[in-house]
Amino acid sequence: MTSSQIDAEPTVSRWKAFGQFSLTIAIGGAGAAGFNWLGLPAAWLSGAMIVVAAATFAGLRAKFPTGIQPPLYTLLGMTMGSGVTPDVVHRIGDWPVSLAGLAVVVALVMFVTYAFLRQLCGWTKEEAYFAAIPGALTFVMAVASERRTDVTRFSTAQIIRLFFLVAALPLFIGQAGGADMGSGPAALPVPFQDTALGLVICIAASFAAVRLRIPGGWLTGAFFASALASGTGFLDTHVPDWALIPCFVILGASIGIRFCEISPAMLLRLLAASVGAFAAGLTVSVVGALAVAWTLGIPAGQVLLAYAPGGLEVMMLLAYLLDMDPAFVAAHQLARYIALILILPPVTLAVLGRNPRGG
Image (cartoon, rainbow, N blue to C red; front, side):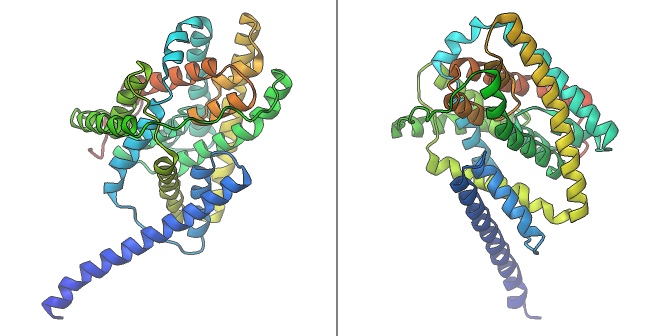
């Protein structure tokens, strides 16, 4: 073999890897678009994940470049932080009892879900722990990736939970809270200069968080920078759909491609465990929400929506569609998310110990 042939092999390998990656993203994008057209929940994320996962059983294989994670998590952190609006900041002190109840419910949901997956399903400590964290999938994936944890099991459990939540909550809330489905307000366009300046600030914050070795630094730094800028009214840090949707598609596809390591029989067991964990956690959430609603005289559906362990954007959308108080829902969802980001690093260290794989 000549030296030119040896030099050509890495180039061919890189082009092959790029082709596989591009094909995976294309398949994920088609699946996400299809889910969105059908009006299914969390379409851009779950659609990409499910269709790519199905494609792996037909032989699809690909490796995702590690360099794609920093910009991906920075944009996701920026958009999550944009939910901290001045109205939410001003009103968050109006509900101390329900916020205290939320803290208790979150702790109980984590404990019950962890125990179910660890003791009854035989999941590893790391898999059960990350699957039990309610409604912070993107951040959890960022932390788990640093620990080199296999994300397939717990990410599937999280996606299934979100899927069932969005499918079941409107039916329950329609009965418990007397809500009517509406169209919700139209989103206002965000000034380009706000988006550009917000992105610069978030990138700088993400770099700082990574340098300080904060778990999930790319997402965490951008989240807090975006939340500070948006919550004070300094900037509107919403990320436009044309930039955000590809992030969800890539994230979903990156989860789905990991199913190449799972057999159909193992997938069925995984689904059974995930549904069981969802049922256990939802039972705790419903009981806690009903108790708080009865104590404070707040509609039960509204409290359940605020306590539901789903993504902020999805729960906010349901609040609009079901004619619930969006500030109440946003305040509790944000309080849960921010608290998880603050306490997860020390809790993860206490439960799982130091990262044995470095990073």
